[in-house]
Image 1 (cartoon, rainbow, N blue to C red):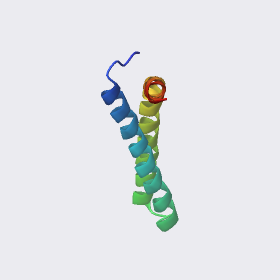
Image 2 (image 1 turned 90 degrees about the horizontal axis):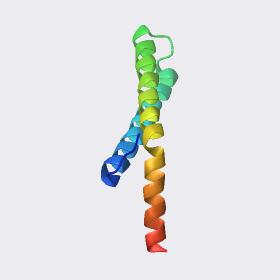
Image 3 (image 1 turned 90 degrees about the vertical axis):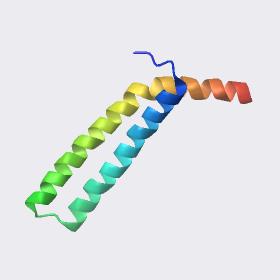
Image 4 (image 1 turned 120 degrees about the vertical axis):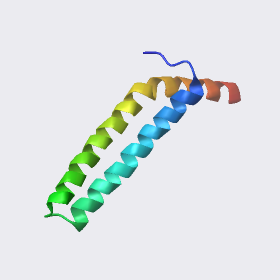
Length: 77
């Protein structure tokens, strides 16, 4: 899979990072604040699924973002 638009690729990577950070935080806070609740278990399950989707987005776009950042670094240096 190749991504040619650096803006789209970078925004996709940052979106995946945001999804991982927010859903991971939600899962941890739910476990800490409401450990024995059936609704809390559902929230933790959905949060961990969201972390997986965010991580998959980051994994797919990482090489393209890395190449884009390397190209920018070569131009600036």
